[in-house]
Length: 368
Image 1 (tube, rainbow, N blue to C red):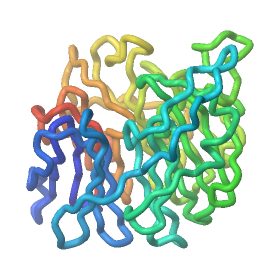
Image 2 (cartoon, helix red, strand yellow):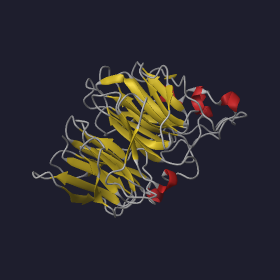
Image 3 (cartoon, rainbow, N blue to C red):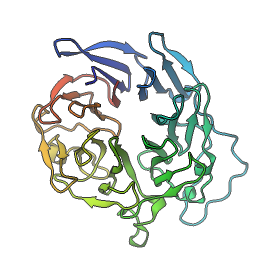
């Protein structure tokens, strides 16, 4: 069971730890006052990574090796932008800038790649580091796909890669989620990519385009570590699950809503997953002001609504896509909201306790 919780917020990184008596408390603050948009705790060597989005001063990436102080390391850098870019065709979005706007996800490489890191970014570039963050390289085969001209921004102005899933059985098999650009997979380390969204739909498009692969809007994609062929996606148009590695997706209906941003899957029980429902589209608050977590334990056939210990209605906390985390045992969950609340469950979501009600808006929650 993990005894440390990392919380990236609009105003810094807050660390909470569990003591020998089982009590959680805040133990450290880093980068106070600065937006910490993404975190990674690398279990292979206990290195921490924190991405900061400093607006006018750009995106920064910091690394803390075990027992050492924080040090700034390299950030992904896009190659020079061609001049001029081709004019967009009818139905295509304006071309995205070739410059880093945000590191939207950080993940480790597979077991066969001890120094490899992956970074998903806005405006839609996937970067790989082979040296623990000392340098980064843009994956050109994905960036150069002609379908990328169809990608467009959802909540941000530009498309972005927010989910990177590395198959623990094969480090060369990587799946990424793009908003709004679909689900893409490589089985040769990034040399070739296929868009795998069969069964998904996009109701925000005209009916004749609703099943087009490259315009799907997965909000978050995760796989079950023990059974990596089982994937869950919280999509703009609902919840989708796959049992064949993403080749075929099926729609899952949940109440009070199938809309949301976050999803977490149990590390060893692929049919168990958690979601935080909200009212759709421009509303984006809990349905009827009732803040709840939903859980399925049978692959989406049925759902339980969990609210013990959570704020009673009216409550308008929204959980971003990286703000719901489950530990390696699958018993402990943590959740942080846009209104600065932080909750913990140590019984799989049956009940929750509030660790803090007054943090800055939470961008990312990770155990480590």
